[in-house]
Image (cartoon, rainbow, N blue to C red; front, side, top):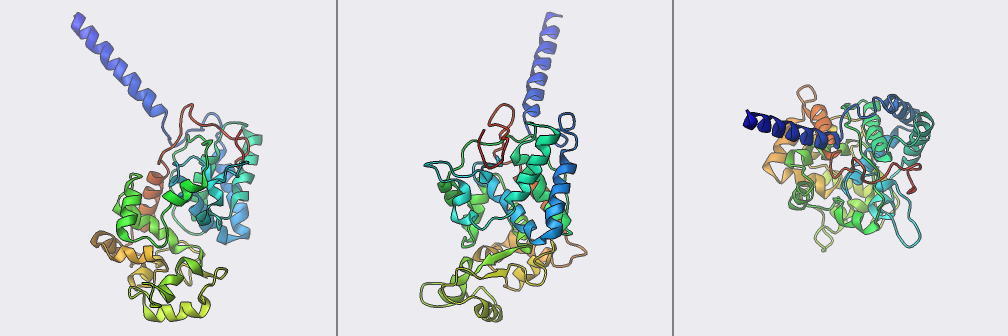
Length: 324
């Protein structure tokens, strides 16, 4: 009898520990008691901006991606530099990000509704989801409960963000180090179906691929010819569509472009150099049988859990660009 009571006590203790551990993670409906209108407020704010400037959807999605890949999804990409410390926002890959005003506006509205409750990192995760949905893309349930980090360092962004020049091996290593697999790599690359890019992000493929003034043999030569008309050597200001013809609409056209060797970046072309990612690209060409929308939501949920701060870690910022 004593043994039975001890085992019962032990099981209850383990259950309580596991329950406590789970309660510290992110979960759907995290704010249902403390700020039940959080998702409606963020979506309304995001819709207000996207309706006037649909091109903001891509940088909002990219902002969440860049946040999660550096120090985890902790809103550190939103922080301004402080004296003697350059923040992630100042790193070259992040200097083209736009849409910070959307996050700030949503935060301001939420501070009126439920002050000190909702983190900036959660707002960013919701805004990225809503921005995609508002331009005819998929939607997904966003687990919430992230807290905001207090650290943002420029060099971290330079070291940890994937680049448009990466080959498959580098991309696989970068994604894998964060718990994302090869399928996630192929799926999240599909985010390039929206948005614009500066010429310098791919100009080496047009003019100096191996350092001998040559073009990238992995890119369609007719496409190279068209890009050369827009992007002259040394051009650092011109921007072009990443998915020509539908860069404002979230769809499967990106995979069609990649399959025709018209992916804009070396990192896009890299998807054709691995059997698994190539297979995924080819499987998405028919929009009627494509699984991209479903897959994208699943990979975004997975990405959104990278290195999150929960419980008593970090803080809930009053202003997203400033530490408390």
